[in-house]
Length: 65
Image 1 (cartoon, rainbow, N blue to C red):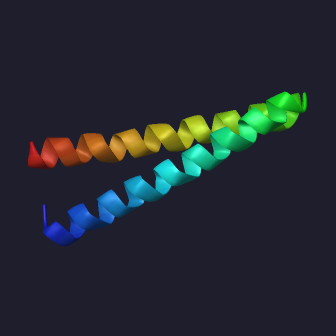
Image 2 (cartoon, helix red, strand yellow):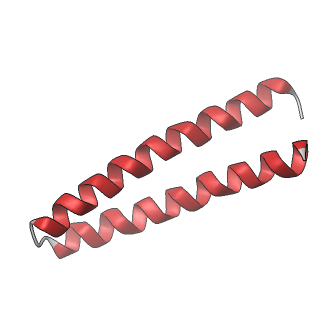
């Protein structure tokens, strides 16, 4: 894998991780406010993005392993 591809994937991974943290923080706030609908939506989106971030790491490990 080219270095530029690796760099792009790492950048995407880092960006996704930041978004996941933000979504989980908002999820916590929604839970505190007993806003179950928003909390559920935020948690679901955070989980999906977390899985995508983990998939990027798996690809990198497989290619560079």
